[in-house]
Length: 203
Figure 1 (tube, rainbow, N blue to C red):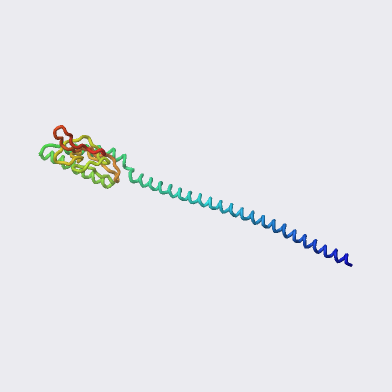
Figure 2: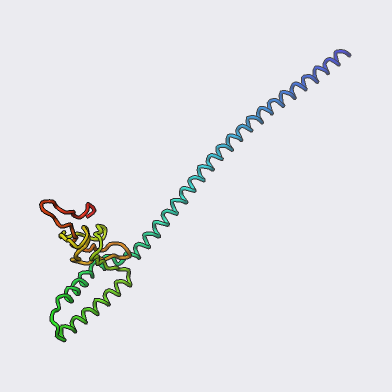
C-alpha cells in the first residue's frame, strides 16, 4: 500500500518537474522570439529612417531642379533678344552718325534731319518696349561694370574719374549689359612734374 502511495507521489513529482521543464523551455523560446522581434523592429525602424531621409533628399533635389528649370526658362524669355539686339545696335549707331553728319541749314537738310530723328525715336521706342535701356553716361562717375574707358583726359572742371565724352553709347537688356559705353574719362591736371590722379583701379 505504501509502495503504491510512494509510486503515485513520485509520479506526481515527475509530472510536475516535466511540466516545469516544459514551461521553462517555452519561456526561453518565447524570450528568444521576443528578442528576435525587437531586433527585427529596430532594423525596420532604421531602414524606415534611412528611406525617409532619402525621400527628403530626393524631394529637395527635385525642388531645386524645378527652380533651376523655371529660372532658366525665365532667363531664356528675358534675354532671348540678346543676340538680336547686338546685331541691330550698329544700325542705330549708323543712324545717329548720319544725323550728326547732316550739315547745312537749308530746307532739304532740315527734312533729312527730321526724318532720321523720327526714325531714331521710333527705333528707341521699340527697343524700350523690349527692355533695352540706353547708357549715355556723360557727366557721370566712371562705372567699370557698364563703361569701358577708351582714354583719359585732363580736366580742371570735372572731378577725376568722371565721364567727359561718350564715344559710343552702351545698352542694357533687362538690366543685363549688352554693350558697354565707350567713354573718355577725366583725370586731374598735372602740375609741374607731379602727375595728377588717374582713373582708379576699378577702371
